[in-house]
Image 1 (cartoon, rainbow, N blue to C red):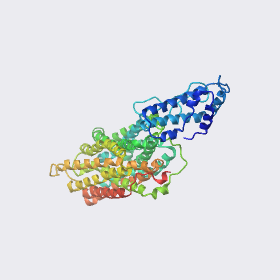
Image 2 (cartoon, rainbow, N blue to C red):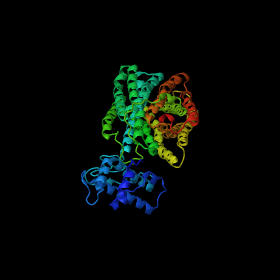
Image 3 (cartoon, helix red, strand yellow):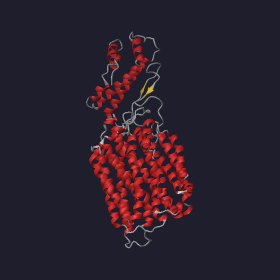
Image 4 (tube, one colour):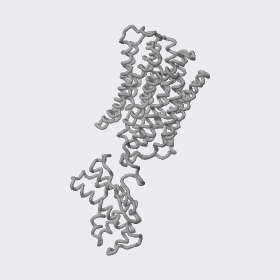
Length: 569
């Protein structure tokens, strides 16, 4: 820390009648003290005692009114004037020394409480109470730190996000029967969501980079909830009107990933990144599971329109509660050296040209496309697969589809701590990201190949026509393993944007998630088209997913990186 010219002047003044100034103001640079070897307990206690004496000396000599000399010491008025003129520098200097002494104790351990620098009196440093954190009143201590309450609320938004995706996956079964849709029509309706979803990815990243993600996320939840609300009347109007309502849902949900990434980049320190990302994006998996649990029984008892009305109401309630959490407020429970700096609105555009010239960015783009090809097509078609291929009714098919998502939800809490633990053990971030994403790709591809061989041959089968009694448990088991492996992507590609560039993480996610939205259009639609032409679930659903996962595994393993990209600076 620079001395601001204080040390020479204070040192000269200390050679006067005041012996205490000799002992307290003759201090060396805090940075040099910090760079020295870690002191013994005895010398450390002496360093802390000396820093406290510095604070007391500053308070003692700052207390008199300006211009009033200190009785018995002809240097008093001059010292007071010096401290008054440089009060901010002296205060910062003392706080830096205290913080570095604490770092010597715990090597920056966040569990240590910063020592308070206090002074009682009038001008200069007097009358102020400050600590190692930012000036101003500190919020009261809370059982759950502010950053994790923000993370939990964003996780709830992502739960609602996938509940509003999966509701159509289940509702399309009775809707198709009531409205006379073909398999191609089912695919078009299910994919209409992604038409809107792909359009807002890059704009969401751009806006979140400019103004921060909290307001963008709130707008997204409100918008997709409105689109969900108008879906039932639109479906009775025409297929095109229903597709428009699903486009509105997609437009709103497309704002969420980049906005949430921006909020996390400003709230969560690097050492907690994998846990925060898995908590937030793991809400997608939990939302799928919850949606599949409740959609079937609700449709069976109250009709398919009620699902849309209920989920829309939940999203609108979330939009009202989110601003009350104050998501832009920093988390003062973190020590300053770990606290991400609040980012002001930026006038600097994201370096899009540098993005597309960086191989590591292309690795995420390809990985995001390949991962979502499997995730979105299974999300949209599994209920129909169990209904058409295995001959199950709508409520049973939705509950059976739930099992793979439950395994994904169960696996997700382990992914973040394991990944962060490997980083703490000395693994490079690049190695951890490649390992996690490799598990997601290779494991899922193997399971898809197994499903292709094990599943029934025809596209439509009556209940009880599968032959062997172990076919259905085997299919559900393979699908469950596939989803459990896929959960490792939360510590792979979903963390990689913040690894490459915390500054432009939202813009990067907008770019890669645009590529990730394309499978929602091509993949979901192609399954319906192929199914009508080949009459085979293996070649329509499982084999294309396996091929896509293998391709993503190869590309990500070669080109991915966890190092900070040059464009971040």
